[in-house]
Image (cartoon, rainbow, N blue to C red):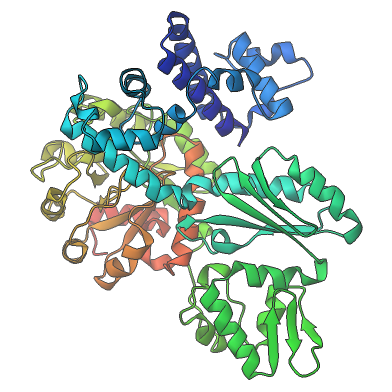
Length: 579
């Protein structure tokens, strides 16, 4: 979490410098950009590089200069960087918020500010609607319209945060709270615990002794992850995280922790159904426990498991509490067996330094081995995606040779030679058949022309015998691009017919296909690959988030093809067996 926060801090420094545009700022930009790249590529928390001799700190991390090291050390010690707060005062407050809009960089923001006195998103939207933005040099009506669409998307996703974006940050917050000496138990409830695709707020439950509550709240209010305190009481604190989400802290008795977790996890319909069942059995249930309705005597409250057991139900995991049929299934001991992280045997979409990845093939393989995978597929970009350093056929051959060499060294994990091949605007693939034939695995994806033409492109490319899976099909990116509105009924039906799998991409900016499309794909008989689309070793950990999302969608192990063992997967790609 420190690495991510610091990367954001130095990125903000970069943006401020670019907006100001002073001569000295040019060199600072280059320096800050380098620091951001270093921070994003570290394989452990930067605190671990800080020993007793702070002067040697920058020597432990090549590329970190003296001034940047001072800022990092200040953040680690105080949770802030004083110079950043001073730098923010040199430009209007709203300019940095404008940079969250897709297709809007510091140069355009500076232009809008200096030429039109546009200093926030509200003024920007008005300037677009008044036709002022399109009249600026280098802009035009099309560019103005794209910015307006970006504002609408930003407003849409600012209401809730994608799970893939905040998952590890929230886990770090929980660890910090759990480590407090007065905390007996602590956990996250709500939609986060139910593994929903997006999260509106965070419910944090903490059990500690009555005599320690005041001290804990004092310490909690000073924890670094909090941005603003909204309300404070003896048992509840409402605040805002630096992540941009509201967080509600509730202090409960240790003996009531299970009941509180059940109640605040929800969802609302599930709780209503559970309450109805309790009433029918002569009981009542609330956040304090399960009680006898006649004499109000407590029956159970310590754990969720004993609450469900007392209601003659199997324990319903949080991700199944959707208010549908889970209670009737629990009553009959027929809850579905859902995929687990341990079921995943390989990751079949990732990038190396051959294209736009941060780590070598060997480094990606080593990290995957640590995650107990049996195989991986390295799928660097194809030649048309020049912005991502896409591979020409010649470089593709070089990569194949390196992959073959690593496999010959028996490094403990099998590496398959794949590619994420662009689907071109006419529905053809970015490599000729002779190049595709030499690949073990092909992820076919769209990276341009995000419009209704994608439907015909998908339908055509599905017929290509070399395609194994369609990558991030709806092309959604949280905060910047909404899912394409296509006839997925038709696409899934054809994919199933031609034995082409559908990717569920769980990178930190996607979750594509979204969970609401999974039942439709299953109805047509489609199978899936759950992939991380990793561009660094650290991103391989996102597989946990992907599995969590599949749990709430009730996806089973047999629906995910990268649960195949190495032998099964090898057989699958060699013989193109039916899915």
